[in-house]
Image (cartoon, rainbow over all chains, first blue to last red; front, side):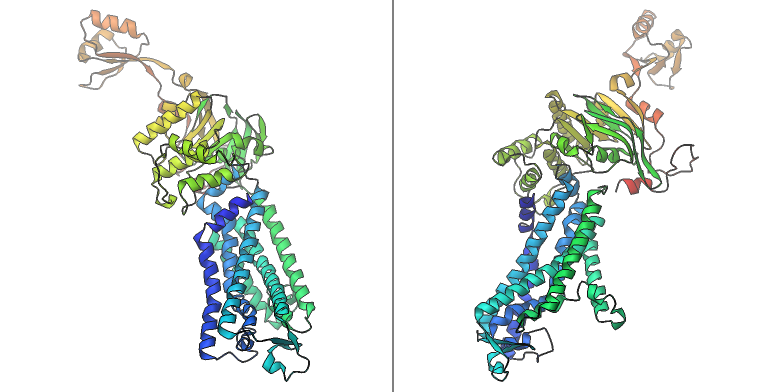
Length: 281
Length: 323
């Protein structure tokens, strides 16, 4: 069943269009920055972008920061929201279940497909961004400091800055990729649950995005500080800590824990609901 | 093949299927008749384990459903509420996907089985156009192909000739009859009397969720005890038959005679010099049977008097149930 779902994913034009768009945005940003040499000053604009001008090997991280707030969650929510509701809407769900495909198996196959899509999207964004970065900005050595990233020419003034080898950058980028993929799975789990509730793929995707926007609003609201640590987007940017030296693990760990909890709770709810649901689509 | 006992489905307060006792035997061509919104599709969905019954028991191919439905489903081909396919893929690709889903029908034989099945339903020469460019009739045939893909012992088909032209309907009817000859039990749910009358050997009639009639078609279409006489000498015939003529329109050559003995009638008329062009014993049509046992369809909402012991149908119940 997993193979069937993967074939469906691969043969669906939408999968490729969405990934192409995801990869395209950072390339577009890189071209603008490279042509004008006008990177936003540190602390403004997308994270890490200011450091990129002097070293392209950081661009994968910057690219992920560009697609993370909206593009990536939208793509993941659309794919996850479509997984069950899309089959229901097109009427194919009843034929799959009557084939028979067990409901739990179908849900598991959809989940695996979602994980594959999310990983493919994040990794492809990182890869295209790496190539773009090297091509447009070159690959000078980079130094990481407790305050964040600097490139070598700035690092010369920063005593605590240690040089990062390309291998180290790759490793830290890999860490960031995995963290972001898990964060996206949190979104995907919410959308997957909603997908079992409604027969409208669009409704499920928008529902998940509404949950994210709510979370984003509450994160910035000091009146909501009581729930702040449990919001799904609270630790979304914690992966930037991978690029500090030494790596600050506290928020990264909490981020994994929060996303893991969301994934477990919503997948459990999706399973409980889908396994006992009357299929009337 | 299919046996249900007191099968009941309730959506909230809405009683959709009410104490249905289906009995479909091996080799039957069973017609499941009923007006729109009468609960046919819900029964079909319960048989396939898609919808869970509120109460009652179901056994399909001797196994309880839904608890062991996964064991019987591989031997069942189904078409529920119209065909469905992935619009951006070709018919063949769709069949390959559905065949690979669940317990695979075998990868090596897949291509051949798909070609054979497409041939059977009259899509053998289909090109690789995506299903979204299929006509309604072609989709229906593709849906039927998906149902036939694994040579099922039992076919559960909901309105299988929807969207087909008269030739197509005839073709599918012949195909189903042929499959039935080869041993496949056919359970056909339909609101079209003609379709059931022409294909089926056994009929169940459902109305407002209740099975109001279930019998062999031949038994249902029993003699009415009257004969139909066609004669150009209608006036004389009425005199001779002396009060036994129940109906004869003025100028019509068709008489309805309250006498089941066509041979004696014929002899009497001919002896009296009345020319008889046709004479047959009257049988109940399936339409008569259905109309006598069912009320108005669930898509009609006139003023109704609530019957005791029945869930009062709310407005638009048909829409809610048969989405």
